[in-house]
Length: 310
Picture 1: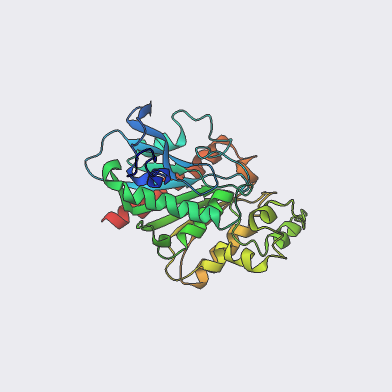
Picture 2: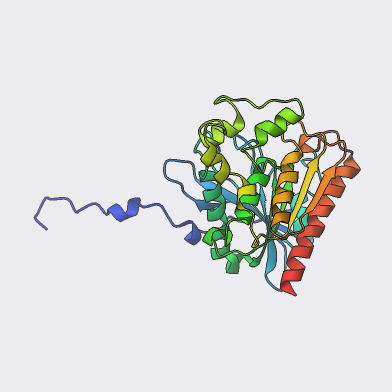
Protein backbone atom coordinates (compact mmCIF):
# COMPACT_ATOMS: atom_id res chain seq x y z
CA UNK A 1 0.00 0.00 0.00
CA UNK A 2 1.37 3.45 -0.91
CA UNK A 3 2.89 5.26 2.04
CA UNK A 4 0.54 7.76 3.69
CA UNK A 5 -2.67 6.30 2.26
CA UNK A 6 -5.09 4.98 4.94
CA UNK A 7 -6.01 1.33 4.91
CA UNK A 8 -9.41 0.57 3.36
CA UNK A 9 -12.22 0.61 5.88
CA UNK A 10 -13.46 -2.89 6.79
CA UNK A 11 -17.09 -2.30 5.82
CA UNK A 12 -18.06 -5.82 6.85
CA UNK A 13 -17.81 -4.60 10.44
CA UNK A 14 -20.86 -2.40 9.84
CA UNK A 15 -23.07 -5.41 9.16
CA UNK A 16 -25.46 -6.15 12.04
CA UNK A 17 -24.60 -9.15 14.20
CA UNK A 18 -26.40 -12.43 13.74
CA UNK A 19 -28.88 -12.68 16.64
CA UNK A 20 -28.55 -16.47 16.57
CA UNK A 21 -24.86 -16.12 17.47
CA UNK A 22 -25.09 -13.48 20.21
CA UNK A 23 -24.60 -14.38 23.88
CA UNK A 24 -27.78 -15.10 25.80
CA UNK A 25 -28.76 -12.84 28.71
CA UNK A 26 -27.76 -13.80 32.21
CA UNK A 27 -30.67 -15.64 33.85
CA UNK A 28 -32.54 -14.48 36.93
CA UNK A 29 -34.85 -16.59 39.12
CA UNK A 30 -38.26 -14.93 39.47
CA UNK A 31 -39.92 -17.95 41.09
CA UNK A 32 -39.02 -21.32 42.54
CA UNK A 33 -37.82 -23.69 39.83
CA UNK A 34 -37.83 -21.02 37.10
CA UNK A 35 -35.09 -19.29 35.10
CA UNK A 36 -35.88 -16.07 33.26
CA UNK A 37 -33.78 -14.69 30.40
CA UNK A 38 -34.94 -11.15 29.67
CA UNK A 39 -34.51 -9.27 26.40
CA UNK A 40 -32.64 -11.79 24.27
CA UNK A 41 -32.10 -10.16 20.88
CA UNK A 42 -33.78 -12.15 18.11
CA UNK A 43 -34.14 -9.70 15.21
CA UNK A 44 -32.70 -6.44 13.91
CA UNK A 45 -35.24 -5.06 11.42
CA UNK A 46 -33.74 -2.41 9.17
CA UNK A 47 -34.76 1.08 10.22
CA UNK A 48 -36.43 -0.10 13.42
CA UNK A 49 -35.61 -0.87 17.03
CA UNK A 50 -34.02 -4.21 17.89
CA UNK A 51 -36.61 -6.84 18.79
CA UNK A 52 -36.17 -9.00 21.87
CA UNK A 53 -37.81 -11.98 23.52
CA UNK A 54 -38.19 -13.01 27.17
CA UNK A 55 -37.71 -16.70 27.98
CA UNK A 56 -39.20 -18.42 31.01
CA UNK A 57 -37.55 -21.81 31.47
CA UNK A 58 -37.75 -24.67 33.96
CA UNK A 59 -34.79 -24.59 36.32
CA UNK A 60 -33.81 -28.11 35.35
CA UNK A 61 -35.24 -30.61 32.90
CA UNK A 62 -33.90 -34.04 31.92
CA UNK A 63 -34.91 -33.54 28.27
CA UNK A 64 -35.97 -30.73 25.92
CA UNK A 65 -39.23 -29.14 27.02
CA UNK A 66 -42.25 -28.10 24.97
CA UNK A 67 -42.50 -24.44 24.01
CA UNK A 68 -45.34 -21.96 24.46
CA UNK A 69 -45.00 -18.69 22.55
CA UNK A 70 -47.13 -15.90 24.03
CA UNK A 71 -48.01 -12.96 21.75
CA UNK A 72 -49.14 -9.79 23.54
CA UNK A 73 -52.14 -7.65 22.64
CA UNK A 74 -52.65 -3.90 22.43
CA UNK A 75 -54.53 -3.37 19.17
CA UNK A 76 -51.28 -3.84 17.21
CA UNK A 77 -50.53 -0.30 18.41
CA UNK A 78 -49.11 -0.71 21.89
CA UNK A 79 -48.44 -3.37 24.52
CA UNK A 80 -45.64 -5.12 26.41
CA UNK A 81 -44.28 -8.49 25.44
CA UNK A 82 -44.66 -9.90 28.96
CA UNK A 83 -48.20 -8.60 29.64
CA UNK A 84 -51.03 -11.17 29.52
CA UNK A 85 -53.62 -8.56 30.47
CA UNK A 86 -54.66 -6.61 33.58
CA UNK A 87 -56.44 -9.51 35.26
CA UNK A 88 -53.23 -11.59 35.47
CA UNK A 89 -50.58 -8.91 36.06
CA UNK A 90 -50.55 -9.21 39.85
CA UNK A 91 -50.37 -12.99 40.03
CA UNK A 92 -47.57 -14.41 42.18
CA UNK A 93 -46.01 -16.45 40.74
CA UNK A 94 -46.88 -14.88 37.40
CA UNK A 95 -48.73 -16.79 34.66
CA UNK A 96 -45.57 -17.54 32.64
CA UNK A 97 -43.62 -18.71 35.68
CA UNK A 98 -46.49 -21.09 36.46
CA UNK A 99 -46.19 -22.57 32.98
CA UNK A 100 -42.46 -23.06 33.51
CA UNK A 101 -43.14 -24.76 36.84
CA UNK A 102 -45.32 -27.19 34.90
CA UNK A 103 -42.47 -28.12 32.56
CA UNK A 104 -42.98 -25.67 29.68
CA UNK A 105 -40.71 -23.04 28.24
CA UNK A 106 -42.51 -19.76 27.53
CA UNK A 107 -41.22 -17.23 25.00
CA UNK A 108 -42.66 -13.70 24.92
CA UNK A 109 -41.45 -11.86 21.79
CA UNK A 110 -41.76 -8.22 20.83
CA UNK A 111 -43.01 -7.35 17.35
CA UNK A 112 -43.20 -4.16 15.35
CA UNK A 113 -46.29 -2.11 16.17
CA UNK A 114 -48.52 -0.47 13.59
CA UNK A 115 -46.87 2.90 14.23
CA UNK A 116 -43.58 1.34 13.09
CA UNK A 117 -44.64 -0.86 10.18
CA UNK A 118 -47.76 -2.09 8.44
CA UNK A 119 -48.90 -5.67 8.20
CA UNK A 120 -47.35 -8.17 7.39
CA UNK A 121 -44.35 -6.88 9.40
CA UNK A 122 -45.91 -8.19 12.62
CA UNK A 123 -46.32 -11.70 11.21
CA UNK A 124 -42.81 -11.57 9.78
CA UNK A 125 -41.46 -10.74 13.23
CA UNK A 126 -43.29 -13.62 14.87
CA UNK A 127 -41.95 -15.99 12.21
CA UNK A 128 -38.44 -14.66 12.88
CA UNK A 129 -38.91 -15.26 16.62
CA UNK A 130 -39.96 -18.86 15.95
CA UNK A 131 -36.94 -19.35 13.69
CA UNK A 132 -34.59 -17.90 16.33
CA UNK A 133 -36.04 -20.17 19.01
CA UNK A 134 -35.59 -23.18 16.74
CA UNK A 135 -32.01 -22.18 15.93
CA UNK A 136 -31.14 -21.92 19.63
CA UNK A 137 -33.27 -24.81 20.83
CA UNK A 138 -30.25 -26.95 21.71
CA UNK A 139 -28.65 -24.49 24.11
CA UNK A 140 -32.02 -23.46 25.59
CA UNK A 141 -33.33 -27.00 26.04
CA UNK A 142 -36.39 -26.48 23.82
CA UNK A 143 -38.37 -29.02 21.83
CA UNK A 144 -39.70 -26.77 19.06
CA UNK A 145 -41.40 -29.80 17.53
CA UNK A 146 -43.94 -29.24 20.31
CA UNK A 147 -44.78 -25.56 20.01
CA UNK A 148 -48.08 -24.03 21.14
CA UNK A 149 -48.96 -20.45 20.25
CA UNK A 150 -51.01 -18.36 22.69
CA UNK A 151 -52.11 -14.78 22.17
CA UNK A 152 -54.54 -12.30 23.63
CA UNK A 153 -56.52 -9.80 21.55
CA UNK A 154 -54.29 -8.53 18.70
CA UNK A 155 -51.69 -11.07 19.81
CA UNK A 156 -54.27 -13.83 19.41
CA UNK A 157 -54.84 -12.61 15.86
CA UNK A 158 -51.09 -12.89 15.12
CA UNK A 159 -50.83 -16.26 16.86
CA UNK A 160 -53.70 -17.64 14.79
CA UNK A 161 -52.15 -16.34 11.57
CA UNK A 162 -48.84 -18.01 12.43
CA UNK A 163 -50.56 -21.29 13.33
CA UNK A 164 -52.38 -21.31 10.01
CA UNK A 165 -49.31 -20.48 7.91
CA UNK A 166 -47.91 -23.70 6.41
CA UNK A 167 -45.63 -24.98 7.80
CA UNK A 168 -45.05 -22.32 10.46
CA UNK A 169 -43.72 -20.01 7.74
CA UNK A 170 -40.52 -22.03 7.28
CA UNK A 171 -39.34 -21.44 10.84
CA UNK A 172 -38.37 -25.02 11.66
CA UNK A 173 -40.91 -25.09 14.50
CA UNK A 174 -43.92 -27.40 14.46
CA UNK A 175 -47.09 -25.75 15.75
CA UNK A 176 -49.07 -28.37 17.63
CA UNK A 177 -51.78 -26.06 19.01
CA UNK A 178 -53.01 -22.47 19.22
CA UNK A 179 -54.92 -20.60 21.94
CA UNK A 180 -56.61 -17.27 21.32
CA UNK A 181 -58.15 -15.00 23.93
CA UNK A 182 -60.79 -12.57 22.55
CA UNK A 183 -58.97 -12.22 19.23
CA UNK A 184 -60.05 -10.58 15.97
CA UNK A 185 -60.02 -13.25 13.27
CA UNK A 186 -61.89 -11.76 10.29
CA UNK A 187 -60.98 -8.15 9.56
CA UNK A 188 -63.20 -8.08 6.49
CA UNK A 189 -66.30 -8.56 8.66
CA UNK A 190 -65.17 -6.86 11.86
CA UNK A 191 -67.18 -3.71 11.09
CA UNK A 192 -70.29 -5.80 10.52
CA UNK A 193 -69.76 -7.66 13.80
CA UNK A 194 -69.24 -4.40 15.69
CA UNK A 195 -72.46 -3.03 14.23
CA UNK A 196 -74.18 -6.16 15.49
CA UNK A 197 -73.41 -5.16 19.07
CA UNK A 198 -74.21 -1.49 18.55
CA UNK A 199 -70.61 -0.31 18.12
CA UNK A 200 -69.97 0.75 14.51
CA UNK A 201 -66.34 0.51 13.46
CA UNK A 202 -64.43 3.60 12.46
CA UNK A 203 -64.22 3.98 8.69
CA UNK A 204 -61.25 6.30 8.71
CA UNK A 205 -57.53 6.06 9.21
CA UNK A 206 -57.85 6.27 13.00
CA UNK A 207 -59.16 2.76 13.58
CA UNK A 208 -56.76 0.12 14.87
CA UNK A 209 -57.39 -2.05 11.83
CA UNK A 210 -56.72 0.84 9.44
CA UNK A 211 -53.45 1.64 11.18
CA UNK A 212 -52.42 -1.99 10.82
CA UNK A 213 -53.41 -2.32 7.16
CA UNK A 214 -52.62 1.17 5.92
CA UNK A 215 -56.29 2.02 5.42
CA UNK A 216 -59.80 0.94 6.50
CA UNK A 217 -60.51 -2.73 5.74
CA UNK A 218 -63.28 -1.89 3.25
CA UNK A 219 -60.74 0.09 1.23
CA UNK A 220 -57.92 -2.39 1.71
CA UNK A 221 -59.93 -5.53 1.04
CA UNK A 222 -57.10 -7.67 -0.29
CA UNK A 223 -54.87 -6.79 2.66
CA UNK A 224 -57.76 -7.36 5.09
CA UNK A 225 -58.37 -10.84 3.69
CA UNK A 226 -54.67 -11.69 3.81
CA UNK A 227 -54.51 -10.51 7.44
CA UNK A 228 -57.58 -12.52 8.50
CA UNK A 229 -56.97 -15.96 10.04
CA UNK A 230 -60.32 -17.20 8.70
CA UNK A 231 -58.89 -16.83 5.19
CA UNK A 232 -56.11 -19.30 6.00
CA UNK A 233 -58.07 -22.12 7.60
CA UNK A 234 -57.17 -25.41 5.93
CA UNK A 235 -57.09 -29.16 6.55
CA UNK A 236 -53.52 -28.70 7.87
CA UNK A 237 -54.54 -26.45 10.78
CA UNK A 238 -53.46 -27.50 14.29
CA UNK A 239 -55.92 -27.83 17.19
CA UNK A 240 -57.39 -24.54 18.40
CA UNK A 241 -58.79 -23.32 21.72
CA UNK A 242 -60.80 -20.12 21.28
CA UNK A 243 -61.85 -18.22 24.42
CA UNK A 244 -64.00 -15.11 24.10
CA UNK A 245 -66.33 -13.15 26.38
CA UNK A 246 -69.97 -12.91 25.32
CA UNK A 247 -70.05 -9.22 26.34
CA UNK A 248 -66.88 -8.14 24.52
CA UNK A 249 -67.48 -4.57 23.31
CA UNK A 250 -64.11 -4.14 21.54
CA UNK A 251 -63.77 -7.41 19.63
CA UNK A 252 -67.17 -9.10 19.29
CA UNK A 253 -67.38 -12.78 20.21
CA UNK A 254 -68.68 -13.39 16.70
CA UNK A 255 -65.06 -13.06 15.55
CA UNK A 256 -64.04 -16.25 17.39
CA UNK A 257 -67.20 -17.96 16.17
CA UNK A 258 -66.20 -17.12 12.59
CA UNK A 259 -62.81 -18.79 12.99
CA UNK A 260 -64.36 -21.84 14.63
CA UNK A 261 -66.79 -22.13 11.71
CA UNK A 262 -63.98 -21.79 9.17
CA UNK A 263 -61.99 -24.54 10.89
CA UNK A 264 -65.03 -26.84 11.05
CA UNK A 265 -65.52 -26.41 7.30
CA UNK A 266 -62.12 -28.06 6.88
CA UNK A 267 -62.92 -31.00 9.14
CA UNK A 268 -61.51 -29.71 12.44
CA UNK A 269 -63.12 -29.69 15.86
CA UNK A 270 -61.88 -26.47 17.51
CA UNK A 271 -62.73 -25.93 21.14
CA UNK A 272 -64.77 -22.72 21.28
CA UNK A 273 -65.73 -21.39 24.71
CA UNK A 274 -67.84 -18.25 24.92
CA UNK A 275 -67.44 -16.97 28.47
CA UNK A 276 -70.75 -15.59 29.81
CA UNK A 277 -70.70 -11.98 31.01
CA UNK A 278 -67.02 -11.34 30.15
CA UNK A 279 -65.90 -8.21 28.32
CA UNK A 280 -62.57 -7.62 26.58
CA UNK A 281 -59.48 -8.33 28.74
CA UNK A 282 -61.78 -10.47 30.93
CA UNK A 283 -63.31 -7.31 32.41
CA UNK A 284 -66.40 -8.23 34.40
CA UNK A 285 -65.30 -11.84 34.86
CA UNK A 286 -64.82 -13.18 38.39
CA UNK A 287 -61.36 -14.09 39.63
CA UNK A 288 -62.46 -17.72 39.55
CA UNK A 289 -63.51 -17.28 35.91
CA UNK A 290 -60.13 -15.82 34.97
CA UNK A 291 -58.38 -18.70 36.70
CA UNK A 292 -60.57 -21.12 34.75
CA UNK A 293 -59.58 -19.52 31.41
CA UNK A 294 -55.93 -19.81 32.40
CA UNK A 295 -56.35 -23.43 33.55
CA UNK A 296 -58.05 -24.32 30.28
CA UNK A 297 -55.14 -22.77 28.40
CA UNK A 298 -52.59 -24.74 30.42
CA UNK A 299 -54.53 -27.99 30.03
CA UNK A 300 -54.88 -27.45 26.28
CA UNK A 301 -51.14 -26.81 25.91
CA UNK A 302 -50.42 -29.95 27.88
CA UNK A 303 -52.75 -32.04 25.70
CA UNK A 304 -51.23 -30.69 22.49
CA UNK A 305 -47.65 -31.34 23.55
CA UNK A 306 -48.04 -34.63 25.43
CA UNK A 307 -49.92 -36.24 22.56
CA UNK A 308 -47.25 -35.07 20.13
CA UNK A 309 -44.46 -36.50 22.28
CA UNK A 310 -46.14 -39.85 22.81
